[in-house]
Amino acid sequence: MLLTDFDLPSFLWLWKIAAWSMGFAIAGYLILLLSGSIILYSRVMRSRRPAWLRPLHLVTGGITVLLVLLLLFIGLIGTIGHYGNLGHSIHLVAGLLVVFLMLLSGWSALQISPQNSWARTLHLRTNIVLLGGFIFVGLTGWQVVQKYLP
Image (tube, rainbow, N blue to C red; front, side):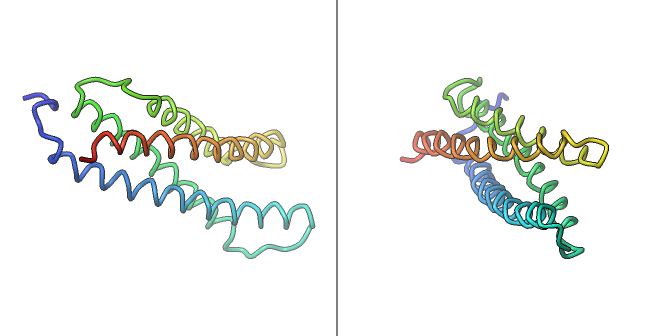
């Protein structure tokens, strides 16, 4: 039995997980934006920041990366399950872009140290581009959702 032998309603639970995951990923991004801005501000102003802020930022970043990978998996399985193959919309390109940017952001965050001054710049710039990526994937995802709604 192929994935294409299933009816769309059997995949409805998958789309619900995707919707919640996307919501949590956006919330994670916003928390990262806020906590990262405070970290940057305290660095520029040479002021103390709360000890819990950096661990919160790192854990939230890790969870957000995992959510985006979950979304990739759901998108691939759901699309193949419904259509039998990939490439039915620009949403695939948007999703792959966001996955790449999230992985680059996470990797660059782990490289940040006094010896790697380039990593902080790469991390900040990647996250600025990632905002556009989230907007792009959100808009294209909305178009995909409309195909499945009656």
